[in-house]
Length: 393
Image (tube, rainbow, N blue to C red; front, side):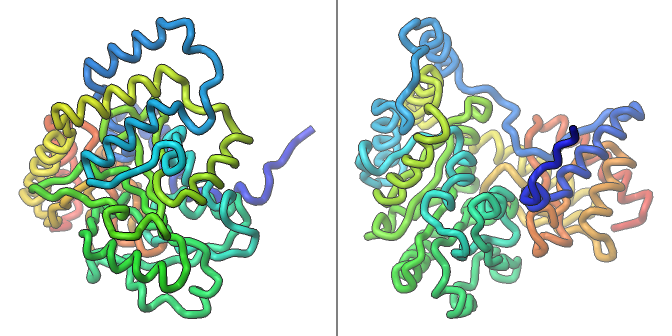
């Protein structure tokens, strides 16, 4: 008996990612050594201290029962302390912090927790694919808010129609941004919070890249805005800041009603994060508070070498202030998908076509800084050959 998947599967994620995976397989099978600058997965391990704590916790026979679905209190308290240290934001560990299996876990289920079928959610275009995919699962309608380079990839809130605002339940944004590598300052968050209160639309901020900022810039939390917890929540993750992507641990903080609603959804789906991982995450947060062990310097050096190398081959790209990505405008006359395809098949370099993140991403590609400087420069050299063959610059 053949079982067909549900119709909603056709609307989950971008077909471009499936295509790209197939392209990679073909290139690898042909014997070409690829350099994958596609998926934004950190290539570095957590600190030695975090790994030791994980070993120690795994060896404890008392850590193999079900954890609390909302996360053990000691981890939530550590998150509260870290938010105070990093953002000067006070959080109540019992009611304003929820542990997640990575921030994507929470983002995937948030609309289910607080929206009804037919509600509207404002999502960025370009944006991280789970933002829109989660709405399909919740039978909620997306309204795409364009983020354009001429506006520093910030939304023009005043241009969203009143008819949409009356039906909108929440708005999702992400700064520092994936895929755009764009940033927002506290002034923007003050504007967003005031706008959200005026229109009674929950502000949902994804802050996964807060510790990957350069040139002295320190990304703010939306919760730094006075009164923000009345209308906002924020997702954060241990994945990028602490090189714990495979551990799958993150959290939601902010508005108590939203935290409670997502907690209820989660309690019906899973039994929480493995206790040893929570223990290791506590160690990572404590280590950062004691030693300010930021990963930013590593990625800032990679960004510098990559941008300098691209300029040398004629590809002039503005230096991003944050994230592990470069959002690069491609030469005129090419589509994003065509550029990514030919660069991969010609030189074995994987970049993500911008339209994988929404229609506004056409004309760009996303480059992930997920290798050491030597490998990144090898990728640049291959790109140079690609450009030279096609006389692009």
